[in-house]
Length: 104
Image (tube, rainbow, N blue to C red; front, side, top):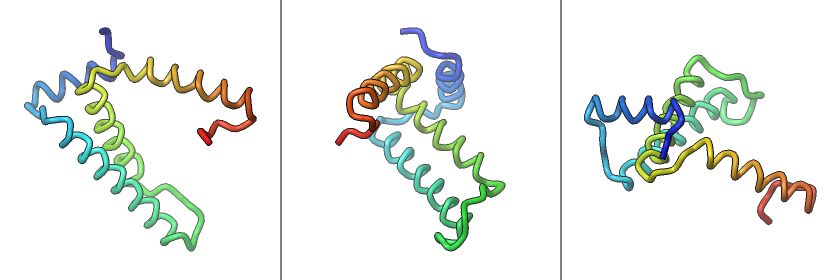
């Protein structure tokens, strides 16, 4: 399988720095990073009392989530570019069929 440049870059980084871990730990790390992103959104909105304005930390937290997601994909042999193309086709079909991208 040929990975996208960003997936290859992450794979090299993980290997170089000996950051390999089991998939269960990768998934927990991803969940943790999404939680940190959610916390930034809560802080940025003052817990829903104000409209969202990204903080200085927002991009970094998104980067952490992306890194963790790429690690999960790499650990399980998923080409994220192909996965994205598949999901876009699925959403297009749903939109054409029922006018909504949701699964229900």
